[in-house]
Image (cartoon, rainbow, N blue to C red; front, side, top):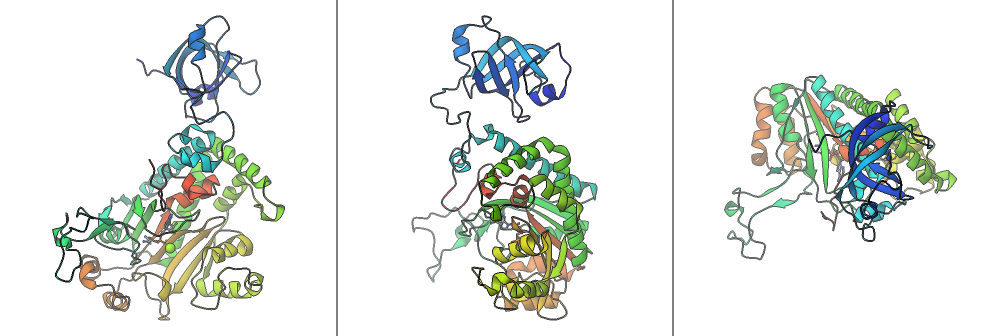
Amino acid sequence: MFNKRMRIKALLANEAANYQVTVMGWVRTFRNNQFIALNDGSTNNNLQVVATLGLFDERMLKRITTGACIKVAGEVITSLGKGQKVELKATSIEILGDSDAEKFPLQPKRHSLEFLREIAHLRFKTNTFGSVFRVRHSLAYAVHKFFNDKGFVYLHTPIITASDAEGAGEMFKVTCLPLDGTAPKNEDGTVNYKEDFFGRSTNLTVSGQLEGELAAMAFSDIYTFGPTFRAENSNTTRHLAEFWMIEPEVAFNDLEDNMNLAEEFIKFIIKHAMDNNREDIEFLAQRLDEEEKQKPQNERNEMGLVEKLDFVVNNDFERLTYTEAIEILMESNHNKKKKFQYLIEGWGSDLHSEHERYLVEKHFKRPVILINYPKDIKSFYMRMNDDGKTVAAMDILAPGIGEIVGGSQREERLDKLTRRMNEMNIPAEDLNWYLDTRRFGSCPHAGFGLGFERLVQFVTGMGNIRDVIPFPRYPKSAEF
Ligand code: 4AD
Ligand code: MG
């Protein structure tokens, strides 16, 4: 069979020698017309292929260029060279795909991440992105493993929806109506969406939570894991217009159960990656170390990547209320000396990423769970606390990232929920289906959303969220 090959990772892991194999992969370098560094994406470690001088046709050897795809058969032998235990002594080499060395944008040298973002269709072929996306895969697998082992049902919530789950209005419209001004109009001049594909106005989902709640009211424990879309014009290293979110929703859980689940979940998936992707994480840690060395001493991270991940897995997250956090921030030298861009004026202020990062990185030096936020800065569905001022919200803040999880106990009391919707001008008739859960067998329940890319950033140490999703979408960019 053509495809009968050994993966390079398995070949290198096996220290035995003197057996015949076939491998396939892409050439990273070709030295002295003899030594090929071959990579097939199973690991960053290249296989050294030896093309003994005089054994191969010169014209074929000329086609072994960086980027070319080749098939090699030969004998695995103990390597005399440094850096590898075994190498492959080629008996046959076949060119599967040429690569013009003059034109191939990836040279065997270090390229900047900005440059690689412009050629995102080729960046998988680099060590950094090889590691990042193998770790991303592993984290995604661990998400399913965690919830499956606990008996949760994986629910596929719709991508196209008519609801604005967060009530924040940052949605991409979905329409088949013409955009040249000829769309059918209502008498008042607005577009008549009754004539549109779905017979109503629709958008891409910002969250699967509300649909998730419907299913939790029957299965008790569900989670979603799918793409979500936000049309917010945020050009930061933490925001994407298209990102993946994991949203568990659990009947009979209160805010504390919700915190416990989220903390256990985060630790589990990080540990899974540490146990299964050690090589890639160590590679990324080294990469980060080198990057850190370029920074002035006082801006460097105290911990390396591996140390940081170990710390998070093995220590409790700090838990405190929004009110306590505001007190800490008001008292901080940062606020007093006006080092924050947005000064904390007092209770009720929304927290910006600089405040979250101060709490996590400077004050507690560990992940933090903040709870009980003022109702006015949170969504309509969060459960009102007895003080009438705060809601049972929780945000988890991670070092270097800021908010990684947002969640809450939900308002299960119909009267309180509809009152809140009224106050926030959310038309009840649009969410009748949602309110039905509170009419027929309502129960206390809670859930959260974890931004998958922010987690991948945390685990890989990558500074920009655009480098942890294969094809990032952000303002003014939807390439590939
Ligand atoms: O805090 P958010 O907006 O919460 C929700 O959507 C709730 N419905 C979740 C729930 O309770 N089921 O978003 C949740 C998380 C954030 O904490 C953040 O990690 C991530 O999603 N996130 C983004 N990630 C990348 N780019 C963006 N533009 C993001 N917006 C939110
Ligand atoms: Mg949030």
